Length: 205
Image (cartoon, rainbow, N blue to C red; front, side):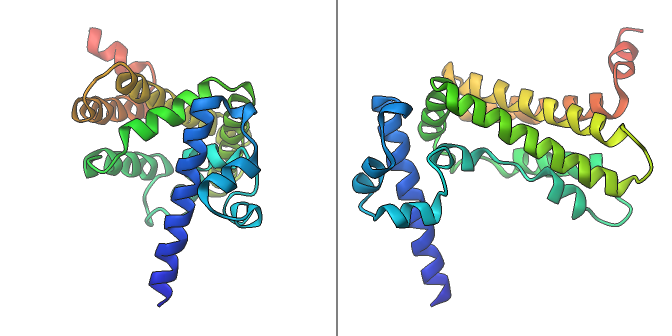
């Protein structure tokens, strides 16, 4: 019974999000009210806020990555960077056959067309960077600014990988091809994070 309730909750959450994205894409994020989203999704406004605490969350909740939890939950003896590489490598290898490409592109389009959402993405990214820095600080105490520098590099690398993936899809690259490129670039990004410029310079010699 509990499983059925959870499935229904997830279905409601997905329906609200899909309806919101469709309305935002058709009319613009600022032109659509939360009341209109709730009405179109067939739920009460209070129900909508139970799932999404703010209007921004209707779009941005799906883009969050919990890098801090990956670092904190890594195996004994595993480095934070290896844990993050393993996580993203696994995502690329799992396959994305179930990905709703059109829905993903709608989300990217809605975010790109709204200064408020772009600012929200920035705030979300900075929050994730701070949480990752705290997790790295716990993993390597007494290292001063090092956790923050590492967190900044990881966050920038992941953001760049995501942007490249979304760009390929938006220009019509098939999902399988975009996924294959993503897998290769994940390895490149984490090699650079681990070895820096020396890994590129070594290829030239």
